[in-house]
Image (cartoon, rainbow, N blue to C red; front, side, top):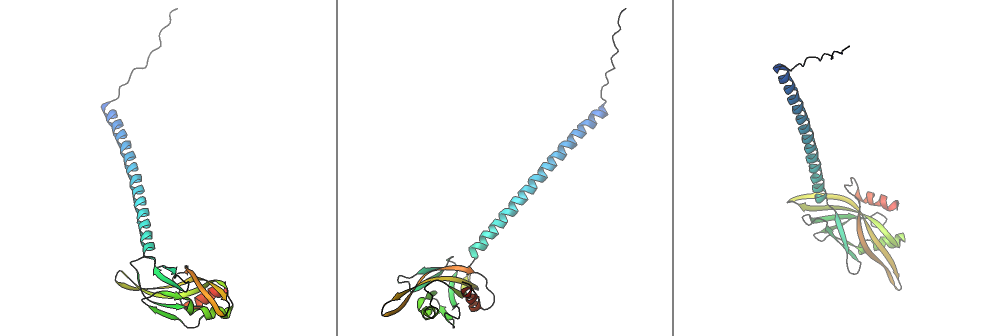
Length: 197
């Protein structure tokens, strides 16, 4: 017996309408993919721009922050104060020490400094031989042609040396920022840090 070959299904060709439909589907998919890619790239670019703006704002804020530095004089009897940023010019200062050290404030104009003579009697009374004494400082300064104020508490490093036949000698060693933007009474703020030492 002879075998009959199986019948093949007739080949069906796509119609023009079906081909146009497939091409339209492929074009729509490519358009969706491109749109999605552009949206992600746009969001990434916006996020990077926002992060860059925040970094610039932070850098500008840090640039404008008022902070003083203190340089000891040759004999240690004085700390010369200066601003961290040269565009900030100190006009006047009112300085408060803890009431145990000095009850009344000291005012300076045009010569920002801390003198050992201001606190040596108070340190003798307390018997302190060295460490840090808090200093409340109200500073009026000029920046960009405008008068501004800063209220801060600094730590003033000092040491006391006993000398035979002469009074104790107070040597001022340096200055560091303790608190910024202090509200209220600066002498009380300095006194609270002194009491907590």
